[in-house]
Length: 331
Image (cartoon, rainbow, N blue to C red; front, side, top):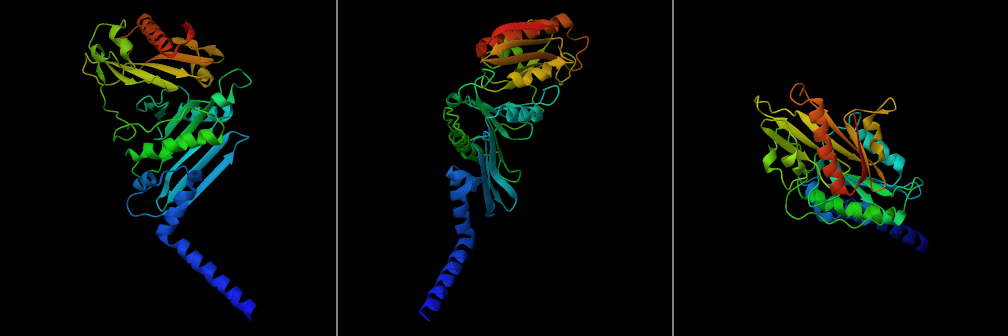
């Protein structure tokens, strides 16, 4: 009789605990506590999921030997926030292939205040950090960690809470994968990640001094009224300076000067095993850097010699900013 009583009490206690855990707000706290091994701040996560929806699940996967770590928190509308981190070169190359397909002219919007990352065309925040604790790979290149962080499409993904949520996840990924990267700080201010602005006409080249595309202020531009749109940053793996001549009233880009940093970018400047014309290369931080000038319907506006002169000015400025060496132009 006594034994049956104990079993009955245990069952009641278990059912009570299950009922308590199934209460929506209790479940929210439990999932937030577990999400991303506890690295996800609860306040920003709740802000992203604002609207009354409760959290529904969390998942974390880690394969330290393979160099990957991932986690996410979900709610009734899908993903709240998540990230995938890679220290393996093959995984990183696969990501860069999707972000920068053939041509490599995808628009990456640099993150503010020197953060080593950008917002890609998919709306994700991509971070590339050096891993001093991992040394160099078999090819002698410094090991790095690539983190793809994201907020769900139904969340408040344009708010500052995105930074407050994902920056701790990047720092946590560095610890889990033994990267040893310097800790990132949440940017100051109340603005969210930069959003696409396809209507931007840029600024007059005479006003570009002090910007990442400031080189155009003294560049050998053909005569005309030129404007520049900066999509460059000193801590991102790729960027562009878009030039537009507005003499004819057009607002479309005439030339793009693009830089890509890392051996992954060699495929973007090669064709049938030969480097494309009007490209340049250098060595930056143990890997290749590649540069190119691309005319967009600017036939007759900027000739080959003028494009080459602009490419040289752009590449020289970039190599100076990044401390690169061995700059060579082709074509």
